Length: 341
Image (cartoon, rainbow, N blue to C red; front, top):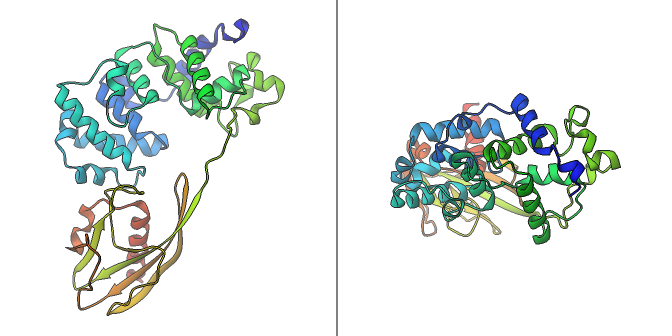
């Protein structure tokens, strides 16, 4: 790291943060629970959407003890629509850990021992809630450091992760670790963005290696791209009187623990008595490493068909009490629209 480029880096980032940093409710508290919840909610989630969910969860579970005492179904129902549901299950499990401890751990190691908490989240919470001088390194930080210091080491390798972690730690001001970590997040999300960075208004423009060597679009470097899998799903919403059948998705696949109507994947539609209507065909739903395409049918029948193990019959009016994957929500919206025509 060149000395003439790291001198003043933290001061410039913190100065920018003082003028442009986002005003978010968890930045007005040192409550570790509120800060931790924000970090979990904002993983793979836009600030606008995440803020709404954070407010909803805090209102329902104002303390970590309240969250620990809730049922998993209640937590998943509040999380519905946010995606990456393992976050909600881990959040709930970690809350139970904290409740057993008698309070939130105040060290990075203690926080990292919580279910679902890794290097980034433990560093972020430790620095913001307790002032622990440890750098939090996420995608925004990789991008800012790679561009400013011209680092070509791939960020998705062990060497890259170690390189960027050491650099971020070396730049961290020990007296303002939480502010610096938040500043780096906001700077990467708002100023040094992936596609259209605001280089003309950047306080680091004079010392940015990527800007002066024409490598803005080339940095940071990734060694490999994740493969995207495609899956074809067929859902059959069964209506028998005022009842419908749903089942909870098992562990080991997407949407673990959420509920859905009869699912057929990789086979022909079963023969069932009643009137079968195609509600919507070819609905695409994109996840991080999967593209799902779903067809949605309505089966109206006078007799309950024999279903695989695990399905249960409920009153249709109770369906809103069950946490559904966003794709199933879309299909239910299509069904409601079709019936209103």
